[in-house]
Image 1 (cartoon, rainbow, N blue to C red):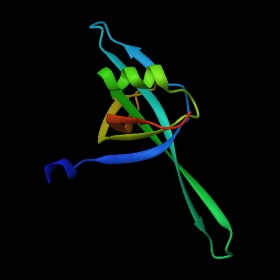
Image 2 (image 1 turned 180 degrees about the vertical axis):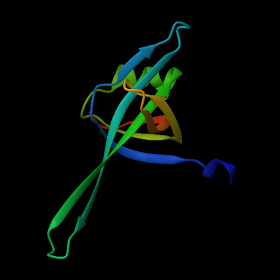
Image 3 (image 1 turned 90 degrees about the vertical axis):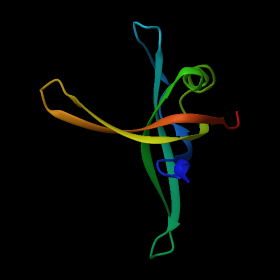
Length: 110
């Protein structure tokens, strides 16, 4: 049951090419945005699609797969956990970010 405490599963399309950040230690972080769509009918019976954007990050071998096989618009599935962090912006203002730290990646159709 402990696996279910902080687990996220999403299927969507990349909104940008994966961005690779390489640290002095040689460790790589890969960042991207993932769009998920939900479709429903409104009161008038019209089909409405809502898009949500998710920040996703991947390390190690999972990050390598993102970098090697995915680009903007590609569909993929991710499994991971939610992480919240904060940092100081250029003007000294505190910014808050929620990210999905990806543990598993499913490459879908090309």
